[in-house]
Amino acid sequence: MGSDREIDVFPPALIDALVDSRHIVVMTGSGTSAESGIPTFRDAQTGLWAKYRPEDLATPEAFARNPQLVSDWYEWRRQLVSKTDPNPGHTAIAALTKLVKQLTLITQNVDGLHQRAGNDDVIEFHGNIMLSRCTDGHPATGIQGDTESPPRCEQCGAMIRPAVVWFGESIPAAVLQRALAAVETCDVFFAIGTSAQVQPAAGLALLAKQNGATLIEINPAETPLTDDCDYILKGPSGAILPKLVSALKQTSDHA
Ligand code: BV8
Image (cartoon, rainbow, N blue to C red; front, side):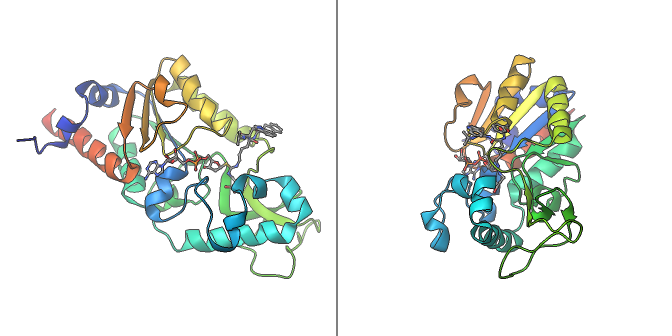
């Protein structure tokens, strides 16, 4: 007869690491949004976009070559994101934030679902697809609707683009600084729903490990990080994270 207590699902030392933690960093990738219905970044794209690889569209070169095509791709993704809701994994991360001493949430995702789930301080490492700016950096209001060509900046006339970090573009210095500061001081680092292929995001996990943090991966599949992890929770984040939060609550209830 298995125990009906979540706490028995996880290694006691893992729960102890969370209870005793001073500062937890959670880094999420697109797998965290998969159960909200948003295809992961490297999942095969559908319909009109099936013939394109995301890595080939999410670049300044692609935008310069065909601004309309790239703008249409982002508009398609915005429409997709606007029809989705946070899933239990997002909600569990927001709950975990309130259960531990300090939690810094870094996301590679651009969908804003962590904020909608209740995390109000999110380090958006790759920006936010719902925001736009011009190619010279001036913020543009709202989502650019359908136009025959990407709209122009009211301030300088440069083309409007999504406020995300493309491949080949540097992570904004202030964002990178905040993330590195958190990684340097954390004692637990979660890598959740990421294939750990994109740099410098993927490197944050190993940096945390080098700084002595306990490294925990939540992913149905193995990744280049898996061998370096102290705990591997194999499965969908939308199923695992609520159980982990419930196990943590049972500990504090018993404390
Ligand atoms: C940089 C925003 C310095 C845009 C994204 C050559 C030239 C230039 C640069 C490079 C180069 N070679 C390498 C680089 C560096 C490059 C890079 O890392 N390339 C990779 C492909 C090798 N990085 C950069 O360019 C970065 N900048 O290096 O600046 C510089 C400057 C100039 C020149 C050189 C260097 C900027 C990278 C940012 C790119 N922008 N997004 C947009 O979204 O449109 S990255 C994109 O990938 C998304 O943000 C996504 O989140 C992110 C990471 O992918 P994952 O989240 O891991 O998603 P993926 O699909 O891969 O995996 C999903 C995982 O979820 C899987 O493991 C799966 O098993 C799991 N999963 C599935 N279901 C679930 C689940 N897990 C849990 N639960 C589930 N239910």
